[in-house]
Every structure is written in structure tokens, then in C-alpha cells.
Amino acid sequence: MNFNVAGITFRRDRSPEISSLRPVGAVSFIAEPDNPVDAGAVKVMYKGLHIGYVPRGDLQGLCLKHKTAIVEDYKYYDGTWNSEHKGQFQSCTVGIEQEQESNGRVIGGKYLRVTNFLKYFDPYGGGDGLIRWAFDQSDTFDGYKKALNDTAEAGTAMHAAIESHLEHGTSDGLPDGWAAFAKKYKPEMQSMEVRFYDNELMVTGQYDFLGTVEVKGVTVLCVVDWKSSKKPSMKHKIQASIYAKNVGAEGALIVAFGAENVQRYSASFISGEQIESNYMGMRHVKAAMDACGVWVQEYWGD
Image (cartoon, rainbow, N blue to C red; front, side, top):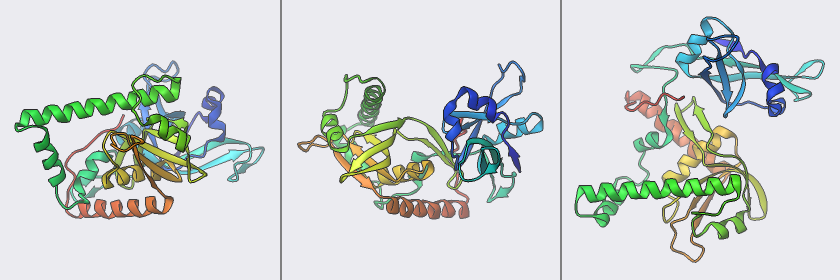
């Protein structure tokens, strides 16, 4: 079911960056009950940007039920409609997949977080690494849970410190290897912590950083994922590949600030070719899950 997004001109007047928008992939829907004109208004969001509204009527409820839709087409206008990005972004058509049963699962609107999706794929052939880490932390389950919680809190604090530094120039709480990393890769931030919805894998997630970094003397548009581990893992690389694929980045970079080397960080760059290969592998994982009727934990995005 396709429909044209309403109110693009209205939103463009309030958010000039919409003028040069080139939407690809998914949009999401959010109710706007305090809208002074229409209490049933539903906003159309693209990568955190409010670009327009769902047309009034039955579509509003349907879109809220589905949560997301796919961008089917968009046009620019400079006196005539065109697809060559001449003038300003003016029209966007999105499509909602009709509900249907597939292996006992209703298609549309239900998403796994990327990290939960990857639990169904173990590139190491077993969980021995996590078990070994658990025994290294404590000889009791409560001790292991505390160590896991402490690690998570440290990672959250590290992310907050990096985000504050990139947005406001603060330096409190930055990991030890930050200065060496910034000197080598010269990160220039475009956006951070923006949620995406992948309607191919039916997953959702938020990347840490989208912007340019310098890789071997070449400036590359990258998704960057900060980790507090000693080194990037294969799952980290696949996770970042899914992020990069969804936002159209040319590469992805995993930066682990728990490294014990001189630089105090370990980084792994993922090329565009590797991103495509990793993403194709995850499509096979998703196909296997659907064939076996596996879809245990659901996440409804907001």
C-alpha cells in the first residue's frame, strides 16, 4: 500500500535541511496528539528528522500499527518534477507491507534489536569465551552478574563522555586512547545515536557515530562504534556492518578502548565490500530463522 507523505513543504520551511534530503530505506511513524490542527496527526520520521505527515484518515491508524514503511520514490521540484535532485526535495512516496502470515509470524512492525538478532548467530561455534570470562570474574553467579553490570555501566559512561566531547567539546571521562585515536582518524561528526529500522532483516538499532574519518589518507563516510572491550570482535564487525548498510556509509570502524597496547585502543576498519558480504550473510541467517519459525524476542520501535 503506497501513499504520498503530506506536509513536506510545511516541514521544509521549519527544517531547511529537508531541502536536500535523499531518503532511502525506512521511515517511521510517531503520533502527535498535541497537533493544534489534527489530534490524530501522525508524523513521518526519517533518520530522526520530521519530514511530513501521514494523510488524514484510516491511514493514520494503520501507520501507527505498522510503525514503519519503506521509501518507494521521491522527487525534487525546480519548476518541473525531476529525479536529478534539481531544486528542492518536494515529494516522497512510501509503502506499507500488507499484513500476511509467514511461518506463523505477522509481517510488518515487529523488530529485533541488532544485538539480539546476532545472538542467533555465533561466529565462534560456541559460548566458551563468555563462560571463561564469567569464571575469571567470580566463583559465584552473583559475582558474575555484578561484573557484567559493572562492565555495562562503564561502557555507558564511556559512550556518554565521547558524545559530550563531540557535541560540546568536553573532555571529562574520555577513554585513555581517545587522543591517539582522534589524531590518527580525525573524526568529523555528522550525527549520533539515530535509530534506524531495517525492513530486510527486521531489526532496529542506533549507531554511535556517523561522520567522516581518515583511513590511510582517504576521507571516508563511516559508522563508528565505540567499544570498551580489548579488541573488536567478529560480532562487533557484523553489527557495525548492519548499521553502515542502513545509513549508506562507505565503511564502518570499530574502536575498542579497552586495549592494553601503547595507543590504548584497537581499531578495525570494515570496507564497503566487507559490509556487503557481512550483510548478505545476515540475510541468510534471517532466512534460516524464518524457515524454522524462529522469532523469539520482539521489539516495537518508538
